[in-house]
Image (cartoon, rainbow over all chains, first blue to last red; front, side):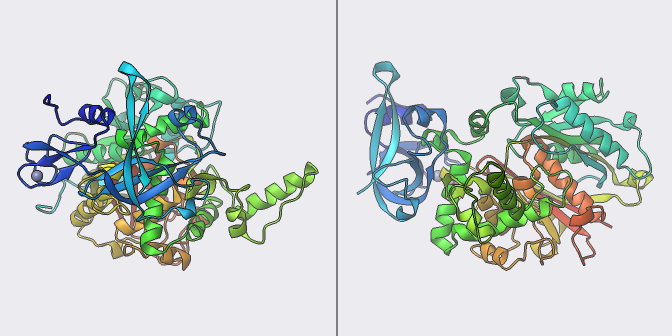
Length: 138
Length: 423
Ligand SMILES: [Zn+2]
């Protein structure tokens, strides 16, 4: 496998391959997703790639009625809100993602603590492919 | 913290002013700042010659985006006749002018300058709501934006976690909105100077005049519960949980402690100043998503420097870009325990006549939030309250000596806490 730097761009490349990868600090063992080159806990610069299982639980969410252009283009609006959330992966890191398989029109029915599994949303084609991280109830 | 923070020599605030906050299609940033500057100069009790200003520090977040013009420090310096003296812009999203204030304090404390002008300006209303939302989103973290988050969404998500953890509900937040509107009605500079009751009456009158079905609500909470009157923006944040789009400017004159009483018998002393940074929703250095690490750090620094604890602060302006932010701010600043601020709010403790008045100005929610002008705008309220010049919204029955302001940028990416004292 090619050597990839611990960067947001590498994170995006892995997502394009349906992989959620993290960097693990060789010194203190802390795990970071998306990968980062410097450990904020012990300041070590020695990192290694480690795959995430892609499971975790919802720790925060919102159902957005007034979204940015990117989401409006996908057909979301006041009548068709979407859910974004923060997921704590079983390995520890917190990651932001879209939350699918829930009802954003009834936000009270969505529960913090819900177990979720990763999904990869591919948009665009060829060179322009971009993959968004998403999660769905297991 | 390794040791207590200290500054080289004492710094005082000797003048403060602000433009009215609001949406002003016929005013630009220069005019708004000039309005604030004139009032600031006039506020110096024993008179002030603007030629004595050594340097200007100006907070501005993103006029580059909002009006497609950058490099605002010399533009404002030129507008107030300050050239060729130095002018420096600070940018830390919505905390831009609290940072201008801090840079001004450092410049005087170091001995380099004796008198500086600090302030901020933002001109947002030339853009429409969608454009402003996109412009403000530039202050979020890239990882948040790709997940579809907006700022109301970010603070909504923090709210969802807070609700789940502590049992707070959307209804509990209504009391913040009602309180902010009550305070703003007493503030002649506020963008939304009316109570929720006033707004209800206005909507009823409008419906009657137009021959439409006249709406009815039993009380303010029923109005805020009504999705027609108060639509969801990003659950659990609805329209009345969010600050408006604003234009405005604010400014203050700072000088060294030794010369302050030449200008006024009632200067305010800068006794605590703190700043922190944070990594947003994904931050690996913040284990608690219902608390902002940057606020906690800034507060600890400022309390340490002042030799004070939270109970010594008599009132505070805090960064309530969204109602939920006010809840976590006043916990992170130590005014209330984690998980208990919403109960204190329900009990009325944060009202104007409560035990810990919060956002007596009406806050960002109702005074307005021209982002670059907010930091020194908050300190302007502390100035008026401490000097007994807050008019109808003067905090009653207290001999005010110590007040503070908390300013926040982005997803808590930058937070500041500043403590002022009247001696
Ligand atoms: Zn480490």
